[in-house]
Length: 110
Length: 118
Image (cartoon, rainbow over all chains, first blue to last red):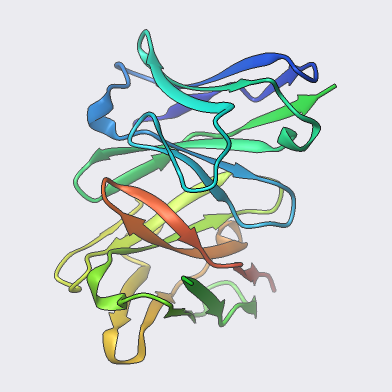
């Protein structure tokens, strides 16, 4: 069974830059998996940040960007702010009708 | 604006059934694929099921295949998840989500909590 991997946790200083990644237990992530990224704070529904690898969802600040780095999808936050402290999830559309979420990354801003 | 409102959650005994609903508004429901995504307490998001915009195709995560059934009623703008043979590990907040092209979730409901416990 394919597993989508994310760093369990990450820390960034206010104003700093952090890159979260989204990989596969076997193989490489490519644009053909249409990676998307979601932000979630405790008790809230997820919020869509990035779709189709690098397209920002409406209203998402441009300090959030998506890309493919090596064999993984990546979410980069440039100029991190305190309210970026959240859980971040990627999801891949692996084949027709199958989506798989990564385990999520808990981002701390301190 | 797009709104998705889930309902039907609650406490249910192992082995029993439950049906969740998600009422959509603010968009043409019959034009979009719809998903269920769940989140166990303190855990990450897990994709559960998808139904095509016209109901012609449905897919499920292995963890629920054969036990859960996704359906939709466009006349009621409602998405359903019929859950049977429930297990403790099905305990989660269940979200419905709208799919946009290409293959991502752009709108989410607030979720409904299902607790499977004796």
